[in-house]
Length: 217
Image (cartoon, rainbow, N blue to C red; front, side, top):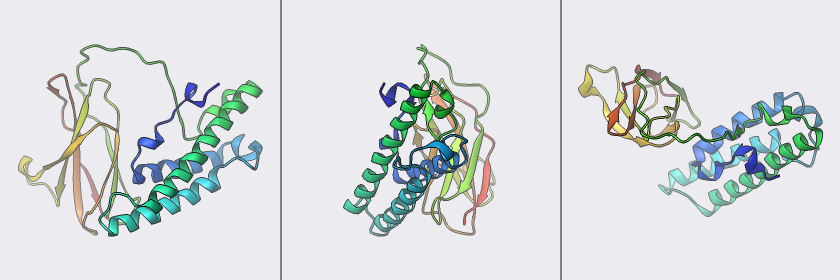
């Protein structure tokens, strides 16, 4: 059985801040998992290794950003090492679940279970505003934004406003996004920022989410 038969493995498509967040979340979940935390074989990479990779990637990403580069050979190397351990970890969990006939190994471990895809045609974007959340990090001057997926959306439009908005004209387009999580960087610390997002698909626009405010740290 391939690990791809059980989990959605898209970690190679994540940018470094997204991968850092995923490693941190997965480490927390696996450290608290009743089976993984107590029965996983010691040779298998797990929470401790994930946290180590998180620190290494954060460090090299910060260095690359300081050099105004998208990547460096050092950043590529630490990301490759992290992805190798993630693949080993995921494969091991699938094999343990199969061997023991116990799907508990496959849940609450950081991975997204793969579900059978349903074909949809000309689905309209949702008429209900998306739920948007914001939190500081993973690095200084960065904010992570997460929102609920709209099955009818081909992309999402994110807008940003520095300071308290005075009206529609206060918001500026940040970008059109495909994923439901993004990291906004180069923000001024100790400043208020407001964010909102909407679905786009089939020549339709969904309603704007309620603005989410955060003080950048």
